[in-house]
Image (cartoon, rainbow, N blue to C red; front, side):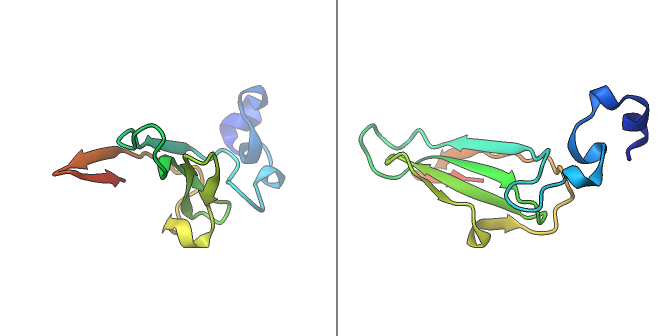
Length: 105
């Protein structure tokens, strides 16, 4: 147990209190998330509205895309952008356009 949480348990959650709280499937408990909106897609167009990055319980950083058809796509092993990240790694994302090309990073 984290020493701070041992002294102040009401200020802590999840794995900081007990390892039994750590996820064994899906997103890591306490994972940060990052969202990158893709505003260059005009209303009514097909494609991605935004990309959501999260930490999977294995430590991998993965992404999901939310489409204009109101469906989540991805989040599986093929959408891994980093492996072996430390638990609760801060995540950041940005969407931008340069020279008429759109990027999400």
